[in-house]
Each structure stands twice: as structure tokens, then as C-alpha cells.
Length: 289
Image (cartoon, rainbow, N blue to C red; front, side, top):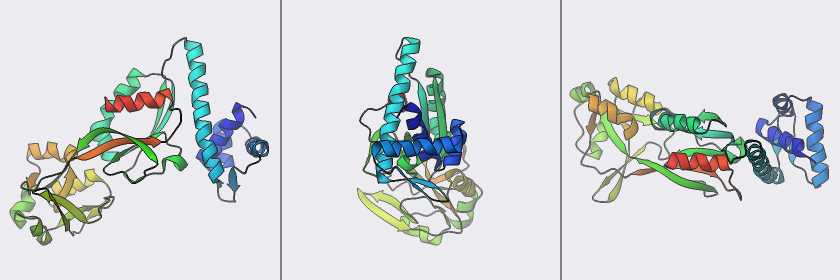
């Protein structure tokens, strides 16, 4: 067994295909397949399930995959340090980031990180869905709100809060809700990725109030949700990093301000590892800084 076997195994797990992994490694499919078979023979353990549609790692394979990532990361760090004579941060990161928060808040942080560490390459996938870091081969993800997966490490990098708002034209035509219960008489623009479904959460005198709302539109993108609100289609429940500018410009009017809004944590999460790679540590420190 040598380093090429480990690289091949990592590629197979991440690509879920011998053909795609071979193309990524620029070797023949038979070579890639043989390397995995040799690994399994050497370890006396089945690492992957082979089907006609995909190659899926076994539980032992997933555990081994995580160990391989650490070994390869340490190997690359050691090589780069030896070549450069310094402990320069070097390597590759695959990240999952929420679409709107990335565009509105994280983009400058990513730019400054890239400038500070020119020897780091980034694969950034933006989605508002919760991805599986392990099976997807992600080094880290940024999550908004309460974390569900307790197997991940997390570090807080910021906070947001949610506000209710609507366009001047909508409120002029339909009236302004004075209480949470008044939302029942209005069109509300739903966010389909919300962990609370169609329930909007408010706070009054320290008590949580949940209000189930309804509306013609349910979308999975906050920016479009805000656009619909600005165009007079209803009331939106938006993160302040999206809504604040439009409220300041008068394109949206904040409503139900008598109800407190609880701060929501923004966290970077990453799989549990015995030895975190220097490049990942640098990235997390940069976001938190």
C-alpha cells in the first residue's frame, strides 16, 4: 500500500464511481479499481459496495476515508513545508455555504482569505439545504440556527435576527398587522427550507410565540422571497442581513416591531478529526476573526 492507493480511495468515495475517480486521477478505470481491491485485500476489510449504478462506501470504508483525509492532509502539509522551508498554509478545502448569507456576508471574508493564503484552493458549493459533510467530502459548512447533527464540531462566527416586513404598496392596500394573530388575514411569503416549516416564531415578554402562516408563494431562496415582498406579493420573514438595506431605502417597511427577535447563531461546522489540517484551522480562524 502507498499514497496513490489512498488518493485513489478518496477519489472513489467522493466521486461515487470508478470511472469518474479514474478520470479525476488521470488513470485507467482498471487501475483505479485494482488499487481499491489491493487496499481491501491488504486491510482484510471491504471498503466499498460495488453496484451497477454507484460505488458506496461501507461503514468501515467511511471511517477509513476520514483517516485517509487526515493522512493525505498531513502529507501535503509536510511536503509543502519542506519545499518552502516555512509552515505556509497550503492545500484544498471543499465548503458548503448558504446561498444568501454567502453573497451578502461571507463573500468579503472568502476574498480576504484567498488573498491571505494564495497557496490554498477552494471548492465552494452554495446551497440552503443541509448537506452531509462526510458523504459529500466537505471539509466544513456554514450553518444558520440550531445544529441538529451533534457529531460535528462547531464554532460560532456571527449572529443574525429575523424581521417581518412588507412593501409600502402591500401595506397600503391590505393594512398593517398590529399583532401576530393579524397575520392570519394576510398573504405571507414562506421559506420552504425553514426548519420550523410554515411556523413563524416571535417573542413577547420573554415568551416564544409560534404563528402558523399561509400564502400563495413558498420559495427556497431568501433573496427571491425578499423580491416577492418588495413587489407587493405579501409579508416576508427575512434575515436582517438581507432586509436591512431595503428597509433603509424604503422599499420594505418593518412591521410587528413590538415583538422581540432572538439572535440566531451562525456557525462553521466540521467533522470530528483527531488532527485538524492547518488549512482548515486557518479558514475557521479567519471566519471567526
